[in-house]
Image (cartoon, rainbow, N blue to C red):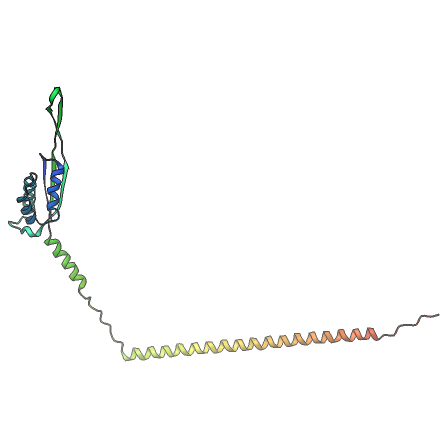
Length: 211
């Protein structure tokens, strides 16, 4: 839960006020109020008032009578520049010096941490809890036997298929061997015939020329 308090047109320069704001940023409200109470800076008084009003706004939002200041954290402190009043100071020989009277806008955001911590702790505890394991029903003896029989049948069918494939391969190899033998025999017969024909041509006697 968050609450905000804003104070505008503070008669102090933003640069000087940011020095005080840096002292209480990301601290508890109690620590911040103690630091501002004993600070000698002029702007610390205005920051003290706005921080107190932010804490009161948080109590009103939560609708609680009291709340420990240790559990309330100062989330952010922002200081913005406001309008500047331009004035003139008379100077010697008819001259005039310019005076800039600066102003600042202050806003403080306060956060209550305990609710967020509780929610985060509950989430962590839920995540850390072991999830209940699902009970696996033990298979009955009949189901186990049936599964074994099915597995044996599958193995037998696989063995038969493997045997059939092996036999097919063997028959194919035999057929191819027979074909190769026949082709080899044909080639040898053709070669022998060609050799015989060549020999006959060479052996033929030449005819004598008639006188």
